[in-house]
Amino acid sequence: MSARVLIVDDLFPNLKLLETKLSMEYFGVVAAMNGPEALAICEKGLCDIVLLDVMMPGMDGFEVCRRLKTNPVTAHLPVVIVTALDEPSDRLRGLDAGADDFLTKPIDDTALFTRVRSLLRLKSVTDELRSRAMASRELGMGDPFALAAAETGQGARILLVEDRPNAADRMSTALSQHHTVTIEPDPHRALVAATEGTFDLALVSIDLDGFDGLRLCSQLRSLDRTRDMALIMVGEPHGMARLTRGLDFGVHDYLLRPVDRNELIARVRTQIRRRRFSETLRGAVQASIELAVTDELTGLHNRRYLDRQLGPLFGEATAQALGLACLILDIDRFKSINDTYGHEAGDEVLKAFADRVRQHTRGIDIVARFGGEEVVIVMPGATLADAQAAGERIRERMESAAFLVQRGATAITVTVSIGVAVRHVGDTSASDMLKRSDDALYRAKASGRNRVVAEAA
Image (cartoon, rainbow, N blue to C red; front, top):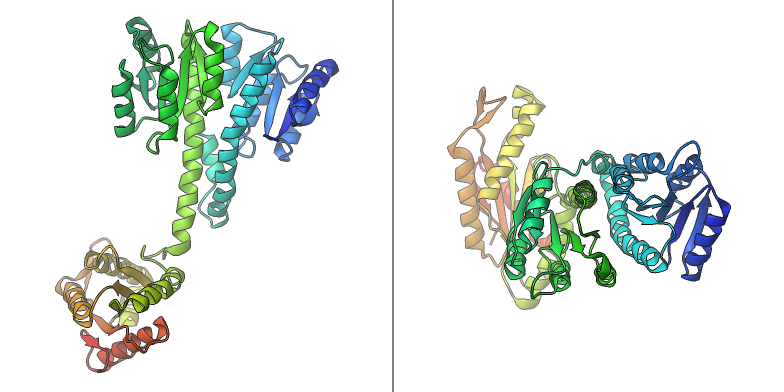
């Protein structure tokens, strides 16, 4: 796994030692000898992970980490604090600053490479989300990176898989101040609970009585329902080889017994923040995708979506000799609504109109805003009679109840004219069917509006 590792240390021999070790494992290495230099390198996007010494003059490693994690531009970068200090209070300071992990000098090579590779795997997923989430920001949907970086990591639902009652009670008590904790000592029931519930994080003892906790971790990482859940192992100091295996197949972090209360709280918070960071970016990606194919005002599909879907639907219907119907709906005298009540009221009518149309179409139908006050409905498998019946239901629904606008202060009577057509054997493309629907709509308007007219025989 090739990546650029930023080493931050004010002592040149330490820099060279780490650079040599990492280069032998085919990592690219970038170096900085102070905090400001490190921040500048990170903000320019010149590294993928940061190995950060604590004891530096001026700006220490804790402050550098804190600034990286609160800056939306750099918050996604994994930070491993490297320190000669090995007190729980020092680890807690690093985790509170937002560090993803820490290594104690002298650095064990296996721990170093395992941690770096594990964090880089997680970052590669986040990077893909970040690149796609850029689209939502460019579309004016707000800044998902700032929102993600502001996550506090509190209020999570946690599944604690621990069969030692005293240990489970201590961990649950420590976490319950800020989270909702469910204790499940049985690994089989825990797997069921995880797949059926909505947990943000699972804490799993890998030394369960009569069961290999690593197997449960592997199952949680492989199932679709639990793959994105944060996962922390709890193990013994003499079991580092097994903990390392867990990190290799995707477990996010581990805690050693006896579990320090403050470190438990801090590591859980770190993993919750990371998971929600990814969730926020994933939500931004989904929103940008929906915006690309959705009409912003009505929530219906837009013309672009209709154009992309109609061709394949028409081709499939032609190849398999299936029915395909098209309805074009147009609100009668919509201009007079805008002129009389204002464009805001007109927009309210369009939204309500779209809602009523949705209520009388099937899940397989394509409903799209064609432009202005026109809506197109494409009905796969439908005959002309089916489409006429659907059009009549929609027409009656529009006429039957007035549209309330301006916070319910104004009631507007709305009617709709509808043109209907179906695919013909001789049609060369979907545009032929659309043209006949449009002609039928024109005749509906010309013959008095508020009616459904089928294509000419």
